[in-house]
Length: 95
Image 1 (tube, rainbow, N blue to C red):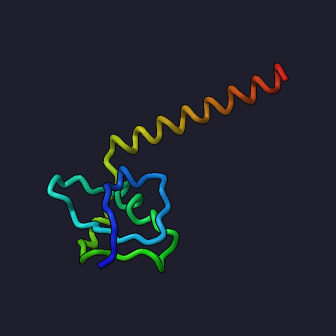
Image 2 (cartoon, rainbow, N blue to C red):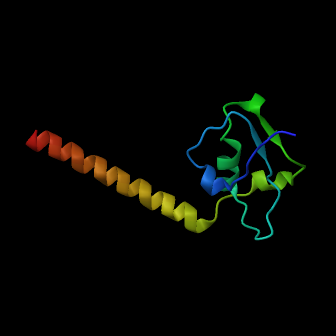
């Protein structure tokens, strides 16, 4: 027996773990999406230190993000571009 602990993909964000066992089966809430998969599968330090707990439905990797998330991503990208242009303007005219 090996001591271990478990946590959600939300709690795992920003962490790097030496060994990871991932369960990517659809939760009862049905809330599994590509963002969850990315976080869960990118927490290990490499492919040799990650294991999948059980079989899963391959189609989860072929889904697209919901329209609301895509629209918000586009909006944030536009705001980022505006901010960069504003800073460039300030540097050129004030600095």
